[in-house]
Image (tube, rainbow, N blue to C red; front, side):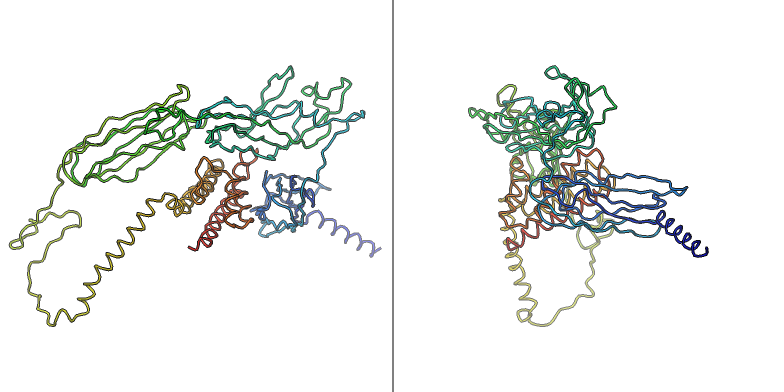
Length: 613
């Protein structure tokens, strides 16, 4: 009897331990995944008080596109009055390349202890491991094909114009039309390519709102997916490639009416079966016309749209060595980012400095905004100075002609600046000297401590050093000036050398946004840092810059493919984030900031080593 009681006690102890034991584990939906498929990665903590779980730290996911996550979910269970629960962090991922990989260890903190998950081995193979699904409906032998689904769920791409001028805006809109229940979160399979266009994403809601439209006699729920403003940079016929989504859908069981879609909106009890459907929009062709080549004004620098210009000079009467400000303000509709502000021609005797440029772009529909330029000018000689009228020319597509805006000429009257008159040494007093800040101090007039130094000056080494020093300084200044002139004459070299500095500035701004948790602006700034760096470093004009083009040039420069993959991951992550109904949070932002910084540093190091600098 004693032995039985002992066995029962041991059983109860093990049973309670199994209920209240804490553990942290990792799992995947499949260990063998096709390169074109997505899979789910889940980290699960099981314990008594899941509310005490803190500081979830995921492993590196650089080998995958993060389509969504971390998505957090909890569950609680009560067994014989004992409460236990689980907390899960899940990701939806898509592989970047084939091979065998190990998903590393994640960790969480729980009541002063750190729990770590198990690593997972997975294999990525070419193609797809998911066969095209055909759904057998209950109580009916007929199958539902992808063709049947495509009539009831599709993506439509439309443009406001099919024929535009070079540089004229065309707006492309992507809408989802469905008569089928969408069972879970959609994921992006492929973003559209805008080859031959400069693109600007237009503002849309982060959450898809559905309305109702009738198409060919059928009623659809319609949701806006994406809008973009495109500015063609090439003439001829250009193609916008399709936008592709993978959409989990739920199909009802076939009814006696013979059509499973007829009463979709009216039967909440039919759960049906869920499958993943690959939806693909139509491709769109745009005809781009060249700008007229007759009577083109000399002041035309490529601006297309409709603009106004205002100019101002803050003072017309000025003294030598004082500063004045000349502002040029251009606003209107068109590609504000690529707008070239006209330069001013300063007359002899006036120094002109590089302008300070400010801009604001409105992306609500037609791209509009302003771009301002402020020149600082300093007159060095006296007299009446004249700055020629400023001209700005743009092509107006609506009127089909060039329009030139001209300012008035600017007259500046320059008078001598203040001069400081020195007093005589004898009889000087502190009252005779005007102290300007710390520039002028009282001059000692006694010479009691002066003495004549003995020795022959020509035999002193200091004499020869002082004689040679100006020569060395002159050689150095001439060499430095030559280098500066060469750099100033080569804009590409200047941009190349400043590329990393400009990227660091944008990353610093992104870091500030990281602390404010403003995700949309954060990912936008990271994207600008990456693409701006590539534009300057690879000598790519903005109109020709694309991720595929940058990848091609980096491969030609023998940059490591792993580094290129990390660059693509960071850039595409910034594009994907807008389509994720649940954002990644601060942890995902920290990861993308760290990876983007490392990518820029490593590309810079590789290019520097290959250039022998």
